[in-house]
Length: 323
Ligand code: PMV
Image (cartoon, rainbow, N blue to C red):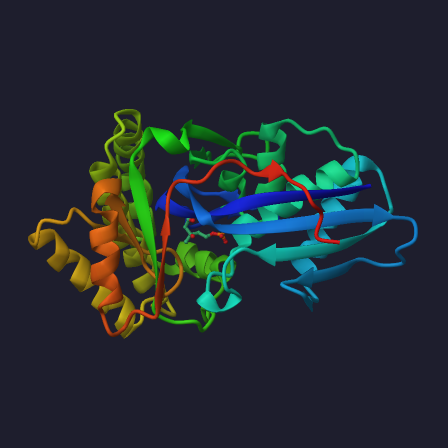
């Protein structure tokens, strides 16, 4: 009763920010993302009558993570089992880079736990399970460029819109700080939906933004995908900035990178920034310009390190197990 899965983290391109229901993690809006091939999490889960309670280790250290245990409870309820589990999870990138990576974490946990307990879930069913751990995790299940639908528990599932190879996009993950964000995204979403006067305007703007992104993915236009993600970043952060209390996920270093990306465009590199709920920006750029963009970012004094990622694949079962 042991299985191991590997999942990629993902970057919101048209971002998910806000829920209609907290407990089921039902998103207020459709969202689109791209998986990042170098930001992976591998997780082994074993259910056994020999375990008296769940134990969870993340990157080798014991973790008292109630969200993991709650997720295991969901899987046990689906399988009508009471078996306890051992969970080991390892990120394929330095823990200190500040990407808490709930997306890759809950995607890998969902597939590994479902397989270990003997549930035979379809990919769509897995996206529903992963969403209940973390909304963005749902989009890491099908991989590539994928969309998580808004709606009720039945409707809020993720599908792949475009394969990893179909859009020649690269993402430079730019590390400017390692401190975890002060406001976790669940809390931030609640504050924004309840207080930002811009939130309703965002919901009105989204249908066209989503259609434009779907069209850019269909036509395989990486510069347009990157441009639209920057537009959406500023729209989402406008709702955060105008919340009460206001949510400023950017630091001075984040803003320095934003300005340098705009200067790069003036110098002929079609690079665009994208920022989720944190200080570390992504820089999206068509593949032929990726190395030039990365070299330039690494010269900035505020940049600590970078990872160059291509679009990543789906969450998969892998060998060997971590224990
Ligand atoms: O990772 P979650 O499910 O708590 O949500 C994070 C949402 C953003 O990263 C800010 C945007 C997105 O679409 O990924």
